[in-house]
Length: 267
Image (cartoon, rainbow, N blue to C red; front, side, top):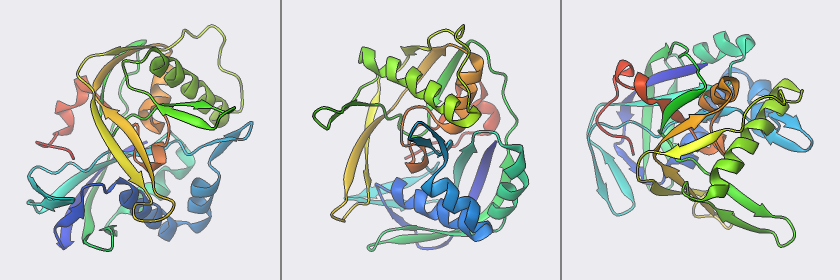
């Protein structure tokens, strides 16, 4: 299930440039106001398989037609902005999620600056056709990390690294296992990645300004995937790569972008 939200500015017009963690918190707050049990489960547990947990929830950068950057602040120069929110399809929560966003007030920001928004419209986007070969555009950074358990070392991979595609595929398989509680079909092909545009690095700070601050580097780029359509569907709705519920891995299908009335810019 994928929603397009149009947000109207009510108060303030300045956000931190690094706003994705704050946006994630605002979205959880909205969902919590609708159903505390659901949001607690989504935040604390999600779908689990062999000690691995996945939220299967992701969202885009804010689409802001006109903006101005001053230092670490992002000035919004329009009355409305657009946001894509996506859940891996669960029919049981569709009515709940649609209703909880309607006419909702959202506040995004940090101690220095905040913006209050009202959700003007909520549109459920139609499901696209999923085929074995598709072209995607990242509308929030795709984050893939290689972990070395023996040394606790991690490496944030670039899309050009051969391990990036391998770990992207393994992550999709793990999400499938967690959601469906069964093994993927062994006949499914390995998901293959072809980078189609120069990747643009974007670092997101989680819990910025606190002792727990962690910086994660993801990439915005266009890419082609070949693989099992059901896994591509999972990535489209639930997010590609890691940390999807923190604002990573939301994508759009390029051939459908124009039909969704894409604005001029996303930041």
